[in-house]
Amino acid sequence: MRGQPLGPRRLDLRLLVPTVLGWVVVAFAGLLVPIEWVWWGGGASAVTAALLAAGSVGDRRGRSQRTRLAAMSLAVLALLLVAAAGHRVVREVGPVATLAGERAVVTLRGLVL
Image 1 (tube, rainbow, N blue to C red):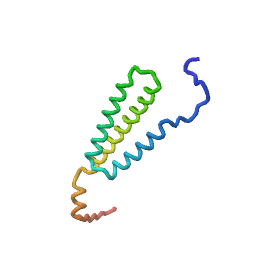
Image 2 (cartoon, rainbow, N blue to C red):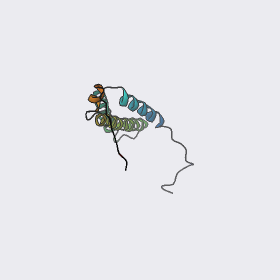
Image 3 (cartoon, rainbow, N blue to C red):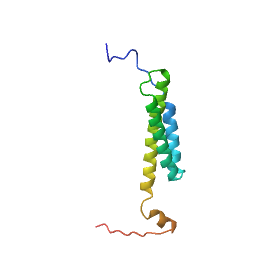
Image 4 (cartoon, rainbow, N blue to C red):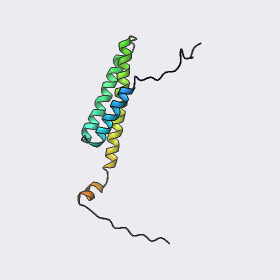
C-alpha cells in the first residue's frame, strides 16, 4: 500500500550532529561574538545553503541526498544565527547599556492601598 511505512519506526539520528552543532554555534554567537560576525555568518550560511540546494536539484544520486541534508542544515543554521542576531539587537536597544556603564541607580517607592 502506498503511504504505509515499510517497517517499524526507528529513531533517525542523521540530524543529531547538525542540531548539536547548530546549538553550540548559536549559543556561542549569542553571547561572545561581535554582532557583525553573527549577521555575516547567517548570511554566509544562507548563501551556501542556497548554492548547495541549487546544485542538487534534479540529481538523484546518493551524493545529492547528502548535499540536500547539508543545505537544510546550513539553512537552519542561517535562520538560527539571524534570530540570535535579532535578539541581540533588540536586547541592546535603549539607554540601559549607557545607564549601566554610568552605574545609574534607581529608587522606586510604591504605595499599596
